[in-house]
Image (cartoon, rainbow, N blue to C red; front, side, top):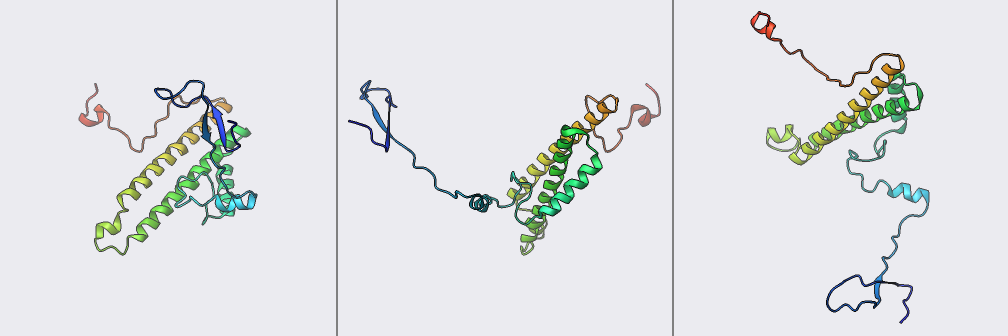
Length: 187
């Protein structure tokens, strides 16, 4: 028996009783997926899965302006004053994280706007728990990306200027009280 074009012959896929060693088993070939072949067609269906754009690999999703993105990117890069391709990449990563954070805020606003018709005040003020979880996760993820890129960029710029770059950076929004300040005595 010769294998046809629709099947591939291989060693037995299953081992055990009832399987004859050396006997070929015909395995069906997966049918090829159909889809757009032209760049225009691929571009058109490339946004099919985008619902809110929070996890989209695209920098600009439907509803956003490419010119606004370019203006935003240029402004951030100009402020950070990168020198060289690595610093430029880090500055663009900062711009991307800030752009995506704006998208999260817009999503949160849209989720809250959808709930304004609900009877309970608490339901109108807070997003649905699933939406709230999504917002918190993406906000935290983007904040980590933003600060990681900013810290790396600052370290590279300090090193370039001949300054020592901190091994560890801690952002503190308020001062902690020392024991001397609490009881007025020194230790």
